[in-house]
Amino acid sequence: MAMVDLVMPKMGESIMEATILKWHKNPGDYVKMDETLLEIATDKVDSEVPSTAEGTLEEVLFQVNDVVSVGTVIARIRTGQEATSASAAPAPTPTPESNEVPATENTAVVQEERPVTNGGARFYSPLVLNIAGSEGVSLSELENIPGSGNDGRVTKKDILQYVADKKAGNVSAPKSMEIMVKQEEPRRTPETSAPVSYSGNVEIIEMDRMRKMISKHMIESTQTSAHVTSFSEADVTNMVLWRERVKKDFEKREGEKITFTPLFVEAVVRCIKKFPWLNSSVEGDKIIVKKDINIGMAAALPNGNLIVPVIKGADQLNLVGLTKQVNQLANAARNNKLKPDDTAGGTFTLTNVGTFGSIMGTPIINQPQVAILAVGAIKKRPVVIETEQGDSIAIRHMMYLSLSYDHRIIDGGLGSTFLNAVTKELENFNPEKEW
Image (cartoon, rainbow, N blue to C red; front, side, top):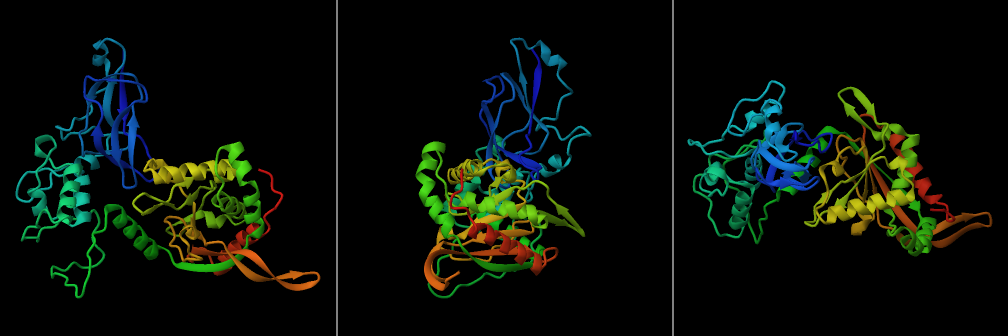
Protein backbone atom coordinates (compact mmCIF):
# COMPACT_ATOMS: atom_id res chain seq x y z
CA MET A 1 0.00 0.00 0.00
CA ALA A 2 2.42 2.59 -1.24
CA MET A 3 2.72 5.12 -4.01
CA VAL A 4 5.41 4.38 -6.63
CA ASP A 5 6.76 7.10 -8.90
CA LEU A 6 7.35 6.19 -12.55
CA VAL A 7 10.10 8.35 -14.04
CA MET A 8 11.13 8.99 -17.62
CA PRO A 9 13.91 6.40 -18.11
CA LYS A 10 17.40 7.21 -19.34
CA MET A 11 17.60 5.75 -22.84
CA GLY A 12 21.19 6.52 -23.80
CA GLU A 13 24.06 8.68 -22.67
CA SER A 14 23.28 11.43 -25.19
CA ILE A 15 19.48 11.39 -24.78
CA MET A 16 18.20 13.88 -22.21
CA GLU A 17 14.50 14.06 -23.06
CA ALA A 18 11.72 12.21 -24.85
CA THR A 19 8.28 12.94 -26.25
CA ILE A 20 5.24 11.01 -25.05
CA LEU A 21 3.50 9.41 -28.04
CA LYS A 22 0.75 7.35 -26.43
CA TRP A 23 -0.53 6.21 -23.03
CA HIS A 24 -1.66 2.57 -23.02
CA LYS A 25 -3.35 2.97 -19.63
CA ASN A 26 -5.63 5.59 -18.11
CA PRO A 27 -5.85 6.70 -14.47
CA GLY A 28 -7.73 4.05 -12.52
CA ASP A 29 -6.58 1.18 -14.74
CA TYR A 30 -4.81 -1.81 -13.21
CA VAL A 31 -1.21 -2.24 -14.36
CA LYS A 32 0.98 -5.33 -14.12
CA MET A 33 4.72 -5.32 -13.51
CA ASP A 34 6.63 -4.83 -16.81
CA GLU A 35 3.40 -4.21 -18.73
CA THR A 36 3.72 -1.53 -21.40
CA LEU A 37 2.45 1.72 -19.91
CA LEU A 38 3.28 4.25 -22.61
CA GLU A 39 5.20 4.85 -25.83
CA ILE A 40 7.87 7.54 -26.17
CA ALA A 41 9.99 8.94 -28.99
CA THR A 42 13.51 10.34 -29.08
CA ASP A 43 15.54 11.79 -31.93
CA LYS A 44 16.74 8.27 -32.73
CA VAL A 45 14.02 5.66 -32.17
CA ASP A 46 10.57 5.09 -30.67
CA SER A 47 10.34 2.88 -27.61
CA GLU A 48 7.89 1.37 -25.11
CA VAL A 49 8.15 2.10 -21.39
CA PRO A 50 7.11 -0.74 -19.03
CA SER A 51 5.58 -0.31 -15.61
CA THR A 52 8.03 -0.58 -12.70
CA ALA A 53 5.35 -1.70 -10.25
CA GLU A 54 2.05 -3.59 -10.08
CA GLY A 55 -1.03 -1.73 -8.97
CA THR A 56 -3.47 0.98 -10.01
CA LEU A 57 -2.42 3.89 -12.18
CA GLU A 58 -3.20 6.72 -9.80
CA GLU A 59 -2.07 9.76 -11.75
CA VAL A 60 -0.69 10.71 -15.16
CA LEU A 61 1.41 13.88 -14.97
CA PHE A 62 2.11 14.49 -18.66
CA GLN A 63 0.00 14.15 -21.75
CA VAL A 64 0.57 13.00 -25.34
CA ASN A 65 3.07 15.19 -27.24
CA ASP A 66 4.60 16.58 -24.03
CA VAL A 67 8.42 16.67 -24.00
CA VAL A 68 9.79 15.37 -20.69
CA SER A 69 13.32 15.38 -19.30
CA VAL A 70 14.97 12.10 -18.28
CA GLY A 71 14.42 11.41 -14.56
CA THR A 72 11.18 13.41 -14.32
CA VAL A 73 8.21 11.73 -12.63
CA ILE A 74 5.61 11.09 -15.34
CA ALA A 75 3.05 8.96 -13.46
CA ARG A 76 2.23 7.43 -10.09
CA ILE A 77 1.13 3.87 -9.38
CA ARG A 78 -0.68 2.91 -6.16
CA THR A 79 0.28 -0.56 -5.02
CA GLY A 80 -1.90 -2.67 -2.69
CA GLN A 81 -5.68 -2.61 -2.29
CA GLU A 82 -6.15 0.61 -0.30
CA ALA A 83 -5.80 4.19 -1.39
CA THR A 84 -5.04 5.58 2.06
CA SER A 85 -1.34 5.57 1.33
CA ALA A 86 -1.86 8.29 -1.24
CA SER A 87 -1.60 10.88 1.50
CA ALA A 88 1.92 9.71 2.24
CA ALA A 89 3.01 10.20 -1.34
CA PRO A 90 5.86 12.59 -2.11
CA ALA A 91 5.21 16.27 -2.76
CA PRO A 92 3.11 16.64 -5.93
CA THR A 93 4.87 17.04 -9.21
CA PRO A 94 3.38 19.62 -11.62
CA THR A 95 0.55 18.45 -13.83
CA PRO A 96 0.37 19.48 -17.47
CA GLU A 97 -2.13 22.20 -16.44
CA SER A 98 0.43 23.84 -14.15
CA ASN A 99 3.31 26.02 -15.29
CA GLU A 100 5.19 25.65 -12.01
CA VAL A 101 7.97 23.13 -11.45
CA PRO A 102 10.08 22.29 -8.37
CA ALA A 103 13.53 23.85 -8.21
CA THR A 104 15.10 20.45 -8.80
CA GLU A 105 13.32 19.90 -12.10
CA ASN A 106 14.65 20.90 -15.48
CA THR A 107 12.81 24.11 -16.29
CA ALA A 108 13.61 23.64 -19.98
CA VAL A 109 10.59 21.33 -20.14
CA VAL A 110 8.20 24.14 -19.23
CA GLN A 111 9.90 26.49 -21.64
CA GLU A 112 9.48 24.03 -24.47
CA GLU A 113 5.79 23.54 -23.64
CA ARG A 114 4.89 27.19 -24.10
CA PRO A 115 2.39 27.65 -26.92
CA VAL A 116 3.68 28.59 -30.34
CA THR A 117 1.14 30.79 -32.03
CA ASN A 118 0.49 32.76 -35.14
CA GLY A 119 -1.60 35.52 -33.68
CA GLY A 120 -3.72 32.97 -31.79
CA ALA A 121 -3.40 30.68 -28.78
CA ARG A 122 -3.22 27.22 -30.30
CA PHE A 123 -0.68 24.87 -28.72
CA TYR A 124 1.88 22.95 -30.80
CA SER A 125 4.12 20.40 -29.10
CA PRO A 126 7.86 20.34 -29.90
CA LEU A 127 7.40 16.99 -31.67
CA VAL A 128 4.73 18.41 -33.98
CA LEU A 129 6.84 21.51 -34.64
CA ASN A 130 9.88 19.37 -35.41
CA ILE A 131 7.95 17.26 -37.92
CA ALA A 132 6.37 20.37 -39.45
CA GLY A 133 9.76 22.02 -39.86
CA SER A 134 11.25 18.87 -41.37
CA GLU A 135 8.39 18.49 -43.84
CA GLY A 136 8.20 22.18 -44.80
CA VAL A 137 4.76 22.76 -43.27
CA SER A 138 4.19 26.44 -42.52
CA LEU A 139 2.64 27.77 -39.33
CA SER A 140 -0.32 29.04 -41.33
CA GLU A 141 -0.87 25.46 -42.56
CA LEU A 142 -0.69 24.16 -38.99
CA GLU A 143 -3.42 26.58 -37.99
CA ASN A 144 -5.78 24.92 -40.50
CA ILE A 145 -5.06 21.29 -39.59
CA PRO A 146 -7.93 19.73 -37.58
CA GLY A 147 -6.55 18.40 -34.30
CA SER A 148 -7.66 15.11 -32.72
CA GLY A 149 -5.85 15.70 -29.41
CA ASN A 150 -7.08 17.27 -26.22
CA ASP A 151 -8.62 20.72 -26.78
CA GLY A 152 -8.18 20.25 -30.51
CA ARG A 153 -4.39 19.91 -30.36
CA VAL A 154 -2.59 18.71 -33.46
CA THR A 155 -1.02 15.34 -32.68
CA LYS A 156 1.81 13.44 -34.35
CA LYS A 157 -0.78 11.35 -36.19
CA ASP A 158 -2.55 14.48 -37.46
CA ILE A 159 0.58 16.16 -38.85
CA LEU A 160 1.85 12.95 -40.47
CA GLN A 161 -1.56 12.37 -42.09
CA TYR A 162 -1.58 15.95 -43.36
CA VAL A 163 1.91 15.53 -44.84
CA ALA A 164 0.86 12.28 -46.53
CA ASP A 165 -2.28 13.91 -47.96
CA LYS A 166 -0.27 16.89 -49.14
CA LYS A 167 2.21 14.69 -50.99
CA ALA A 168 -0.67 12.78 -52.55
CA GLY A 169 -2.12 16.07 -53.82
CA ASN A 170 -5.23 15.83 -51.63
CA VAL A 171 -4.57 19.20 -49.99
CA SER A 172 -3.20 22.45 -51.36
CA ALA A 173 -0.65 24.64 -49.62
CA PRO A 174 -1.90 28.10 -48.53
CA LYS A 175 -0.99 31.06 -50.68
CA SER A 176 0.80 32.82 -47.85
CA MET A 177 3.95 30.97 -46.83
CA GLU A 178 5.83 33.80 -45.16
CA ILE A 179 5.73 32.43 -41.58
CA MET A 180 7.51 29.07 -41.45
CA VAL A 181 7.99 26.79 -38.45
CA LYS A 182 11.49 27.39 -37.16
CA GLN A 183 13.98 24.56 -36.64
CA GLU A 184 15.60 24.01 -33.26
CA GLU A 185 18.88 25.26 -34.73
CA PRO A 186 19.42 28.14 -37.15
CA ARG A 187 20.12 27.26 -40.74
CA ARG A 188 23.72 27.51 -41.79
CA THR A 189 22.84 28.95 -45.19
CA PRO A 190 20.70 32.03 -45.80
CA GLU A 191 17.09 31.36 -46.72
CA THR A 192 15.54 32.73 -49.85
CA SER A 193 11.89 33.41 -50.43
CA ALA A 194 12.21 33.17 -54.19
CA PRO A 195 10.65 29.94 -55.53
CA VAL A 196 13.00 27.44 -57.12
CA SER A 197 12.13 26.40 -60.66
CA TYR A 198 13.16 23.08 -62.20
CA SER A 199 13.57 22.57 -65.91
CA GLY A 200 13.01 19.35 -67.75
CA ASN A 201 11.21 16.21 -66.66
CA VAL A 202 11.78 15.93 -62.88
CA GLU A 203 10.23 14.30 -59.85
CA ILE A 204 10.37 16.16 -56.54
CA ILE A 205 10.56 13.93 -53.46
CA GLU A 206 10.46 15.33 -49.95
CA MET A 207 12.99 13.85 -47.52
CA ASP A 208 11.42 11.98 -44.62
CA ARG A 209 12.33 12.95 -41.06
CA MET A 210 14.95 10.21 -40.67
CA ARG A 211 16.68 11.15 -43.91
CA LYS A 212 16.82 14.80 -42.85
CA MET A 213 18.37 13.80 -39.53
CA ILE A 214 20.97 11.67 -41.32
CA SER A 215 21.72 14.55 -43.68
CA LYS A 216 22.21 16.96 -40.79
CA HIS A 217 24.43 14.47 -38.93
CA MET A 218 26.65 13.86 -41.96
CA ILE A 219 27.09 17.57 -42.71
CA GLU A 220 27.98 18.27 -39.09
CA SER A 221 30.56 15.48 -39.18
CA THR A 222 32.34 16.86 -42.24
CA GLN A 223 32.32 20.32 -40.66
CA THR A 224 33.72 18.96 -37.39
CA SER A 225 36.42 16.44 -38.35
CA ALA A 226 39.29 16.79 -40.79
CA HIS A 227 38.49 13.69 -42.85
CA VAL A 228 41.26 11.58 -44.37
CA THR A 229 40.72 8.14 -45.94
CA SER A 230 43.34 5.41 -46.39
CA PHE A 231 42.88 2.18 -48.36
CA SER A 232 44.26 -1.34 -48.23
CA GLU A 233 43.62 -4.71 -49.83
CA ALA A 234 43.30 -7.98 -47.94
CA ASP A 235 43.52 -11.60 -49.03
CA VAL A 236 40.73 -13.14 -46.93
CA THR A 237 40.78 -16.57 -48.57
CA ASN A 238 41.45 -18.43 -45.29
CA MET A 239 38.55 -16.66 -43.58
CA VAL A 240 36.13 -17.32 -46.45
CA LEU A 241 37.00 -21.02 -46.64
CA TRP A 242 36.81 -21.40 -42.85
CA ARG A 243 33.34 -19.85 -42.70
CA GLU A 244 32.14 -21.99 -45.60
CA ARG A 245 33.38 -25.09 -43.78
CA VAL A 246 31.86 -24.38 -40.34
CA LYS A 247 28.69 -22.38 -41.03
CA LYS A 248 26.30 -25.36 -41.00
CA ASP A 249 27.73 -26.84 -37.80
CA PHE A 250 27.85 -23.38 -36.23
CA GLU A 251 24.18 -22.77 -36.90
CA LYS A 252 23.23 -26.25 -35.71
CA ARG A 253 25.11 -25.90 -32.43
CA GLU A 254 24.57 -22.22 -31.64
CA GLY A 255 21.25 -21.59 -33.37
CA GLU A 256 22.76 -18.58 -35.16
CA LYS A 257 23.97 -17.95 -38.70
CA ILE A 258 27.53 -16.74 -38.79
CA THR A 259 28.25 -13.89 -41.19
CA PHE A 260 31.52 -12.12 -41.93
CA THR A 261 30.61 -9.14 -39.71
CA PRO A 262 31.53 -10.73 -36.33
CA LEU A 263 34.83 -11.86 -37.87
CA PHE A 264 35.54 -8.28 -38.96
CA VAL A 265 34.58 -6.96 -35.51
CA GLU A 266 36.89 -9.48 -33.84
CA ALA A 267 39.84 -8.27 -35.94
CA VAL A 268 39.03 -4.59 -35.30
CA VAL A 269 38.85 -5.12 -31.53
CA ARG A 270 42.29 -6.74 -31.46
CA CYS A 271 43.79 -3.79 -33.34
CA ILE A 272 42.06 -1.16 -31.21
CA LYS A 273 43.75 -2.68 -28.17
CA LYS A 274 47.09 -2.06 -29.90
CA PHE A 275 46.17 1.46 -31.08
CA PRO A 276 43.75 2.91 -28.48
CA TRP A 277 43.69 6.40 -29.99
CA LEU A 278 41.42 5.04 -32.73
CA ASN A 279 38.89 4.46 -29.92
CA SER A 280 38.65 8.05 -28.74
CA SER A 281 36.88 11.39 -29.18
CA VAL A 282 37.91 15.04 -29.21
CA GLU A 283 36.59 17.70 -26.85
CA GLY A 284 38.18 21.06 -27.50
CA ASP A 285 41.92 20.52 -27.12
CA LYS A 286 41.50 17.28 -25.14
CA ILE A 287 41.67 13.70 -26.44
CA ILE A 288 39.26 11.39 -24.61
CA VAL A 289 40.54 7.83 -24.97
CA LYS A 290 37.72 5.34 -24.31
CA LYS A 291 38.56 2.27 -22.26
CA ASP A 292 35.34 0.53 -23.29
CA ILE A 293 35.30 -0.81 -26.84
CA ASN A 294 31.79 -0.43 -28.22
CA ILE A 295 31.63 -1.20 -31.93
CA GLY A 296 28.87 0.40 -34.01
CA MET A 297 27.72 -1.56 -37.04
CA ALA A 298 25.75 0.06 -39.83
CA ALA A 299 22.42 -1.75 -40.39
CA ALA A 300 19.55 -1.15 -42.80
CA LEU A 301 16.08 -0.08 -41.65
CA PRO A 302 12.91 -1.25 -43.45
CA ASN A 303 12.61 2.15 -45.20
CA GLY A 304 16.12 1.82 -46.63
CA ASN A 305 17.79 4.29 -44.27
CA LEU A 306 20.82 3.20 -42.28
CA ILE A 307 21.19 3.21 -38.51
CA VAL A 308 24.18 2.27 -36.35
CA PRO A 309 23.33 -0.07 -33.44
CA VAL A 310 26.20 -0.66 -31.02
CA ILE A 311 27.82 -3.86 -29.76
CA LYS A 312 28.61 -2.90 -26.16
CA GLY A 313 31.77 -4.36 -24.64
CA ALA A 314 32.80 -6.03 -27.88
CA ASP A 315 36.22 -6.84 -26.40
CA GLN A 316 34.53 -8.95 -23.72
CA LEU A 317 32.72 -11.23 -26.19
CA ASN A 318 33.98 -14.34 -27.95
CA LEU A 319 33.04 -15.14 -31.53
CA VAL A 320 29.76 -16.78 -30.54
CA GLY A 321 28.81 -13.80 -28.40
CA LEU A 322 29.68 -11.37 -31.18
CA THR A 323 27.64 -13.38 -33.67
CA LYS A 324 24.58 -13.34 -31.42
CA GLN A 325 24.90 -9.61 -30.81
CA VAL A 326 25.33 -8.85 -34.51
CA ASN A 327 22.31 -10.94 -35.50
CA GLN A 328 20.14 -9.61 -32.69
CA LEU A 329 20.85 -5.96 -33.51
CA ALA A 330 20.47 -6.50 -37.26
CA ASN A 331 17.10 -8.24 -36.76
CA ALA A 332 15.93 -5.49 -34.41
CA ALA A 333 16.85 -2.86 -37.01
CA ARG A 334 15.05 -4.70 -39.79
CA ASN A 335 11.90 -4.98 -37.67
CA ASN A 336 11.98 -1.47 -36.15
CA LYS A 337 12.57 -2.96 -32.68
CA LEU A 338 15.75 -1.09 -31.74
CA LYS A 339 15.70 0.60 -28.35
CA PRO A 340 17.28 4.04 -27.81
CA ASP A 341 20.15 2.53 -25.82
CA ASP A 342 20.95 0.17 -28.71
CA THR A 343 22.28 3.08 -30.76
CA ALA A 344 24.13 4.94 -27.98
CA GLY A 345 27.68 4.78 -26.68
CA GLY A 346 29.57 3.71 -29.80
CA THR A 347 33.33 4.31 -29.80
CA PHE A 348 34.27 3.00 -33.28
CA THR A 349 32.12 2.16 -36.31
CA LEU A 350 32.30 -0.62 -38.90
CA THR A 351 30.26 -0.40 -42.09
CA ASN A 352 30.06 -3.29 -44.52
CA VAL A 353 29.53 -1.59 -47.89
CA GLY A 354 30.13 -4.96 -49.54
CA THR A 355 26.64 -5.97 -48.43
CA PHE A 356 25.31 -3.66 -51.14
CA GLY A 357 27.83 -4.77 -53.77
CA SER A 358 30.36 -1.95 -53.38
CA ILE A 359 34.02 -2.91 -53.48
CA MET A 360 35.11 0.15 -51.46
CA GLY A 361 33.93 3.47 -50.09
CA THR A 362 34.95 6.63 -48.25
CA PRO A 363 32.77 6.56 -45.13
CA ILE A 364 31.96 9.64 -43.04
CA ILE A 365 32.95 9.53 -39.38
CA ASN A 366 30.13 8.90 -36.92
CA GLN A 367 30.53 11.76 -34.42
CA PRO A 368 31.90 12.04 -31.78
CA GLN A 369 34.11 9.14 -32.84
CA VAL A 370 37.39 9.69 -34.70
CA ALA A 371 37.43 6.77 -37.15
CA ILE A 372 35.20 4.48 -39.22
CA LEU A 373 36.19 1.38 -41.18
CA ALA A 374 34.45 0.28 -44.39
CA VAL A 375 34.86 -3.23 -45.78
CA GLY A 376 33.99 -3.91 -49.39
CA ALA A 377 32.60 -6.91 -51.24
CA ILE A 378 34.76 -10.03 -51.31
CA LYS A 379 35.66 -10.89 -54.90
CA LYS A 380 37.65 -13.71 -56.48
CA ARG A 381 40.59 -12.35 -58.44
CA PRO A 382 43.86 -13.67 -59.86
CA VAL A 383 46.74 -12.41 -57.72
CA VAL A 384 50.47 -13.01 -57.48
CA ILE A 385 51.44 -15.39 -54.67
CA GLU A 386 55.00 -15.38 -53.37
CA THR A 387 56.32 -18.83 -52.43
CA GLU A 388 59.71 -20.38 -51.72
CA GLN A 389 59.59 -21.91 -55.19
CA GLY A 390 58.93 -18.50 -56.76
CA ASP A 391 55.98 -16.35 -57.73
CA SER A 392 52.77 -17.85 -59.05
CA ILE A 393 49.31 -16.65 -59.98
CA ALA A 394 46.34 -18.03 -58.05
CA ILE A 395 42.62 -17.32 -57.61
CA ARG A 396 42.13 -15.71 -54.20
CA HIS A 397 39.28 -14.09 -52.27
CA MET A 398 40.21 -10.40 -52.12
CA MET A 399 38.65 -7.46 -50.30
CA TYR A 400 39.33 -3.71 -50.08
CA LEU A 401 39.25 -1.87 -46.75
CA SER A 402 38.99 1.89 -46.30
CA LEU A 403 39.53 3.79 -43.06
CA SER A 404 38.32 7.37 -42.65
CA TYR A 405 39.85 9.10 -39.63
CA ASP A 406 39.99 12.49 -37.98
CA HIS A 407 43.27 14.12 -38.97
CA ARG A 408 43.04 16.47 -35.99
CA ILE A 409 44.45 13.68 -33.80
CA ILE A 410 45.00 10.68 -36.11
CA ASP A 411 47.94 11.34 -38.43
CA GLY A 412 48.43 9.47 -41.69
CA GLY A 413 51.07 7.28 -40.10
CA LEU A 414 48.85 6.08 -37.25
CA GLY A 415 45.79 5.72 -39.48
CA SER A 416 47.67 3.68 -42.09
CA THR A 417 49.39 1.56 -39.43
CA PHE A 418 46.04 0.70 -37.83
CA LEU A 419 44.50 -0.13 -41.20
CA ASN A 420 47.46 -2.33 -42.09
CA ALA A 421 47.12 -4.11 -38.73
CA VAL A 422 43.45 -4.91 -39.43
CA THR A 423 44.44 -6.16 -42.89
CA LYS A 424 47.07 -8.49 -41.44
CA GLU A 425 44.60 -9.80 -38.86
CA LEU A 426 42.23 -10.80 -41.64
CA GLU A 427 44.93 -12.23 -43.89
CA ASN A 428 46.45 -14.27 -41.06
CA PHE A 429 43.09 -15.80 -40.13
CA ASN A 430 43.64 -19.25 -38.63
CA PRO A 431 41.98 -21.82 -40.94
CA GLU A 432 41.83 -24.24 -37.98
CA LYS A 433 40.18 -21.72 -35.68
CA GLU A 434 38.01 -23.11 -32.89
CA TRP A 435 34.72 -21.44 -31.98
